[in-house]
Figure 1 (tube, rainbow, N blue to C red):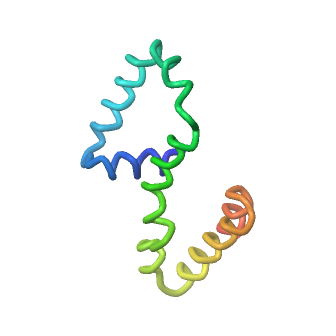
Figure 2 (tube, rainbow, N blue to C red):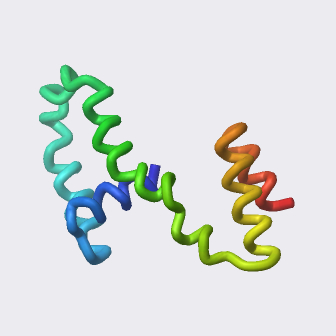
Length: 95
């Protein structure tokens, strides 16, 4: 979703929110030509997303900075999400 798009943009070297606007305008412009992208294997497209997301999953630097109650809630939510589903993990974080 949004996190993977942001990480792919960051991996591409973007530094401002203007990149989101440019990306949206390019997608709108290229939408009529998307039929030529249908033969692209989903594994290739997934590899781009995984390569951007893997750094945040392997070493979650934001979770490493938590202290006290935030540490318990942050890691508990992360582990619950990994072991179950994002919906249940979100629920664990709210409790």
